[in-house]
Length: 166
Image 1 (cartoon, helix red, strand yellow):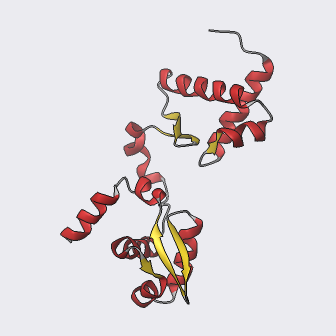
Image 2: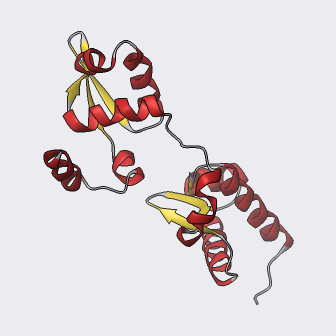
């Protein structure tokens, strides 16, 4: 094992804590928050990634797109699935399902289908990154984001096919 300075060990611990406490950060955000060079931060992240893999831990450090994350390994999901609260409450999920089925769709259409609670749902879905809203006249046009497709592990093509079948 190669020698690691005390400063680098501390940075490694700080990065690990950041990843544990967040839903992911970019390399820029990590290096800026810790106050270290991006190249060093990237080296540490890669070390953490390898370390978590070879130690057969239940969690791993991964890079998804531009975000570095700490998450439960897929093979551990069955053991913890019932312990995790659903990210989306049932009402939000229903509103999101209507948006997915009719996308792109006017917010006014969603409100007609789901009622006035849809205004609050739309705000929360925008904040959580599942949908976008573009102002058009007195309403907004709602559409899905890539986060939706990643979260539900479905492609746009598969979603269209599933909607057709129902």
